[in-house]
Amino acid sequence: MRIPAIKALTEAYSLEELQAAEEALLNEEKPAIDLGPDEPGDQLTHVIGAISILKEVAQGEDPKKALRAFTQRVRNSIS
Image (cartoon, rainbow, N blue to C red; front, side, top):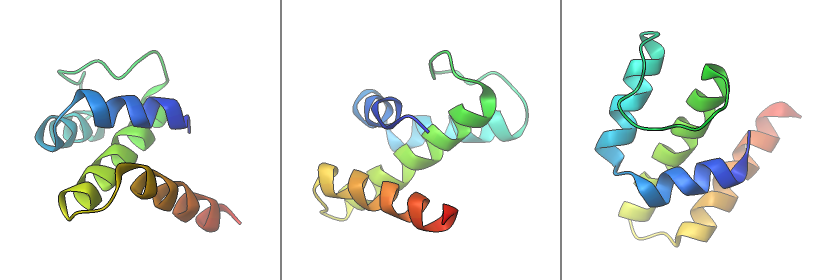
């Protein structure tokens, strides 16, 4: 998981575009948006993170706090 990649996705694409990219990745298709040079598994992680962050921002959360909350959830799930 690369935090700069997640942040870049949240700044460059809408929630709808990211959800379409997630669907494409899950169907093993090429997404319509540029997800960077990472492997599909990492791209999916970045897209899911960006979707989560944008949903929180839509509910009024600060983008930086939403990003921190997502990374904390990931860390907690790993440990």
